[in-house]
Image (tube, rainbow, N blue to C red; front, side, top):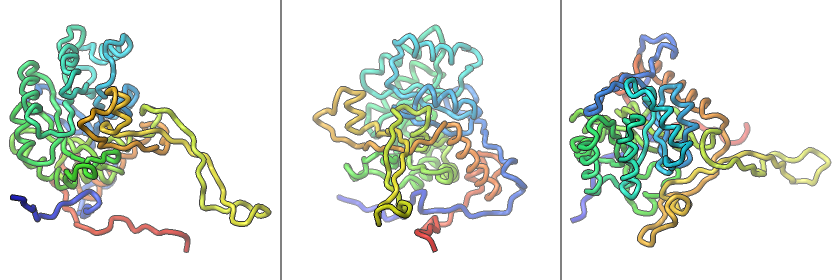
Amino acid sequence: MTQIIDSIELDFCDVLFKPKRTTLNSRREADVIREYKFKYYPQVMNSCGIIASNMATTGTFEINNILQKYQAITCLHKHYDFNSKDNYQYLAKNYKNKESHKNSYTFISTGLKDEKKHVFDLLSDKNFKIDKLCIDIANGYIPKLTDFVKEVRSKFPNLLIMVGNVVTGDMTQDLILSGADIVKVGIGPGSVCTTRKLTGVGRPQLSAILECADAAHGVGGLVCADGGCTCAGDVAKAFGAGADFVMIGGMFAGTDEAAGELIEKTIQTNELIEENANIGSLKHKKEKYKQFYGMSSQLAQEKHFGGMACYRASEGKVVDVAYKGSVESVIQEILGGIRSTMSYIGARRLKDIPKCTTFYRVNRQLNEVFGKS
C-alpha cells in the first residue's frame, strides 16, 4: 500500500544559520582543518573536509594538485587509463612513500562494472600503496553494492572506503556495517543531475544529511554530503547538518584545472549601444565558458561508456559553466565562507559547526533587488 511520509523535508535554500554569541574575534581564528578518525581505516587524516567530485570534469589530476595544498580531497574520476605510462607515473609519484602516505588526499574511483578488476590490480600494486577508494554508483540501494563493499573490505582491510549514494539512515548504517568508512549522501541534488525529474526519486539534501549523519555517527561511520552546493554558504550548511565531508562538482567546474575545452560566446547585454547607433540596439560582449556534464547524461555515456544502453535513459544534462579562472580562487572562497560562518555561530573548530548550529526555517534566503531604483 502506498504510504506518504508527511514530515517537513528541507533543502539548503530552506534554512539560514542563527547567529550566536561567540568567543572568536575574527574569522582568522576559526580552524577549518579537522582531524578525522575512521571506523576501519587505521590512519588519521587532517583535512578541511572538502572533496572534488569524481566526475570526469572535476576529478582531475590538475584539480588534485591544487586542492592538496589546502588539505582538500580529490576523488579522481574512474575514466583515467592507469595502463598509460603517464597516468601510472602520476599515481606512483603521489604514493611513492608507502610508510607516510605522502598523498593523503587522493581517492581513486570505481563502479561495479568491468573496471573492478583493474582497480583491484592497482590496490595490489607493489610499486606504491593506494589506500583510498571511492565506490560510486547512482543507486546505493542495490544488493550488489553491499556485497561489493564487503568484498573490498575483506581483500583490503586497511583501505579507506567511501561509498554511495543513499538518502536514508537505514541504508547508511547497512553500508557502514558492511565495511564502508564514509557514506555519500544525495540522490538527485546535483546541478547537472536530472534523476529527480526523470525518475521521481530523491530527497531534499539538508534533510537527507541530517538523517544519514545521525545514523552513521551512531555506528562509528562518517558521511559525505554529495551534491546541491551552489555557494560557500551551502557548504557550511551541509557541515551544520552533520556532514563530515562535502563533495563538490559544479562549483569546481569552469576552472582552469577542470576538464573541458574553453569556449567563447557572444552574449547580448541589456545595455543600449552608444548614441548615433540604431535606436533600440543592444550591446554584445564575449564571455568564456567550459562544458560541464552529469555522469549519467547521454554525452557522458557516449564519451566514456561507448553509448547509451537501450535499457536506460539519460539522467544528466550538459551545461556551459562560466569560466572562473583557477580552482585555487574557488577553494579559497569556500574556506573563507566557512570561516565566516564559524565566526557568526561561535564554532572555533570545523568539527564544532554542528554543535553550534541552529537553523531558521525560511521561505526566502536572499533579498535580491532587480533593476535600478
